[in-house]
Figure: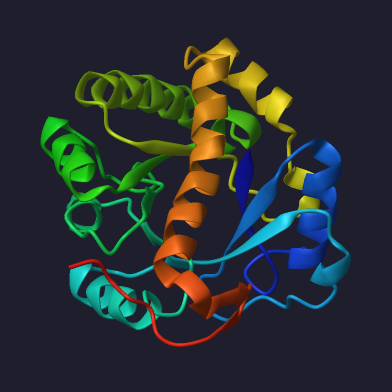
Length: 230
């Protein structure tokens, strides 16, 4: 199973610290999200954990997101687009160059049957963000849990792919797979269902590394250019 983390400079902990902590907690790997600059991968040679070079694109609209996807797709193993508005959510699920739509409910966005079917058609995973379930309180937490349960019903119905993450910005916010599975059971998602969403990050990375073929060497190190399927 894998967790998708926000490493320094976007988060508070280095990629190496995340990898070390994740390995102790029983993860097979981490996907390092970067909103802007590349994280510092120094010290990863000592980590007993797979580290996947990713990016999370944060844009104010589909036009800017589209340009960023084009720029990052040849260079990163996993490409995530942060949603939160209906326009960004729709853009992300309609792009087969995008691997994951993250935080679809971060703003006033929603996911309906149209978006679920588009995501399945284009192979875009929709993220179940457990961060508010773990770290929010009051009405915001209640609304988010309702959104997650609704999203699960829709994705289950259309067999839409998904990933699960607690969106940690520090290694101190990392939670072991068994802990997230327990949270999933408690809030009505199911323990095995959460484990499946954590494992899906690893399947996405493996698929994309196969596409990169011999160009992949290590996080941030590659030969050649990204080759898209026809």
